[in-house]
Image 1: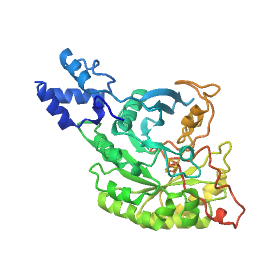
Image 2: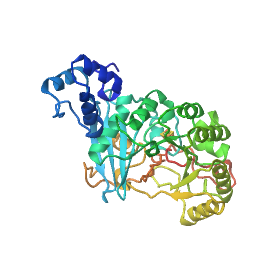
Image 3: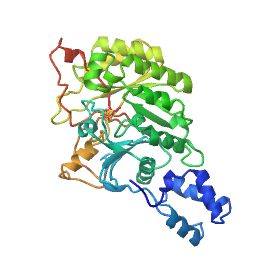
Image 4: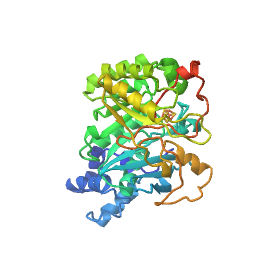
Amino acid sequence: MEHAKPDILEVRPDSLAAWLAEQGAPPYRLSQVLQWVYRKMAGSFAAMSNLPLELRSRLDGTYTFPTLKEVEQRRSQDGSSGKLLFELEDGEQIESVWMDDRGRYTFCISSQAGCALGCSFCATGAMGFGRNLRLGEILGQVVALARAATWPANVVFMGMGEPLLNTEAVIPALEALADPQRFGLGSRRITVSTAGVTPGIRELSKCAARPKLALSLNSPFDDQRSQLMPINGKYPLAEVLQACREYAEATGRRLAFEYVLLGSLNTSPSAARAVAKAARDLRALVNLIAFNPVAGCSFQPPNGDETKQFKTVLEGQGVEVTERFRRGRDIAAACGQLRGKHAQGPPAAAPRQGTAAAVPCERTPAAPCERTPAAPCQGTAAPAPKGTARHRASGHDDGRR
Ligand code: SF4
């Protein structure tokens, strides 16, 4: 969509400096404007109180702010997470989540409206693909979350969409997040989560921001992973793991595997041993995420023994393991859940900034958030009797990665 005025979040500092110089503004005005936009999270040029009125007016006549219309905002009952639903100017809707882990905030943002990858446990995948987000729409989520929660925070690309299928906007967004003149986040505070798009991983390795990389693994077996994550048919696991290895070598960043535990599907000792081998090989951390049951979805959460045994096998092989807490159940925190619910009409007790209707959350908060599976399930991978192909196969974790 064409914009009459450029989005201020899409204007590079050198371009803004040139424009300010054309206006006859002294050089220090650049840092003032950048402070307002990226640190004070101003929502208008009128709010930039230390700028001359005339300059504010010229800025307003030249640039605009992101057009993210907040449709709904929810906050979990315990106050540890919140979710924002936005409507874009063409009517597409996207979600963003903030999570507070004992004062350590993480923002989980979307890179696409919907998703084309169709992972069988993911609410966003069930919606299909809308479009790629623009740079301003990606960064606008960060600004909105900062206003709703706090800043600075970790930022994870684990919301709606596959970020490495929108590198045209995601890579400039990563650069803006890491740029000391703009958001100024240390690159260790930025994570990109992928379902396994190998060309995108290789492109990302050239990005100056050098974010952390998380692979939504969910199964160490190609047949099983392909059932859960059709993208595995295009980029098989060995190829994806090789790209991850190259990424770690090129950036020095430690990898993470995200693994959503689906009861009786991807929790076998043989799966755990295979995950452990891959993790050891790549020196990757493994994040385990218990799937949350969702109405209409045939996947089941793991029982306590499954989770414990899986974790024990990994740790026994010397792999560092974390377990994600289920947070945000009451805010529909998993990828695509709130948008899906909103599309069905407001929930019975639908709240803005308060309590919320109960909805299972998969995507796990905790920093970094995991791209999570969730509801509604597409129903293509129902648990099958032991010994069947489907049973042998289960797996992506995720949460969305
Ligand atoms: S888990 Fe991620 S990649 Fe898979 S369908 Fe959902 S949003 Fe897309």
